[in-house]
Image (cartoon, rainbow, N blue to C red):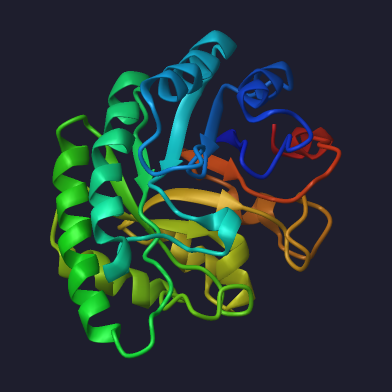
Length: 251
């Protein structure tokens, strides 16, 4: 098991491009990000600056979201007709970053519901996920489909392992996998051990529950749950003053 830091939710007191170095200084070899730019198609200078920040810090980019609109309350673009062009323009940028940085996983947040367009949204999501998967496969990456929780994301339709897996199976591409965020799944009462053991699980993220804080601040038996897991585990929790002493319990 290897921990990586989600630098979009941790080290937020620092400018974004300084966070990979902060993660490395804290002892981590991997980082992940939500979409780290203000636009879906940033300029070359912005992209180069991000790549340089990762490389100069000496960390690996383990995961990256496609354009997601999270700062504005969005939860991805994959199923949203009004964002179809923006999403497809973004695919090549995100895949290009994965190629340059050797990033193995790209997270394709499904998108919030639009009233009256649900059926079209599901059709569009499958089309976009298949396209993203084929582009990602060309650079050796997987595409992740994530289940969130309905309390914090009431308009997001994938709020269970089954809902996410059904989408993955409907896409039918061999490199589409499930992102098991144990915090979101715990909030929905899912079987966390079963989620970790699911054959389609391709990446894991953690935060304690309740509160979405660092491990040890809530009730989840994360050390026991993750025992024997040998993949990357993304630290996607809130901690205004990052303290990683808890990781010693996992050594």
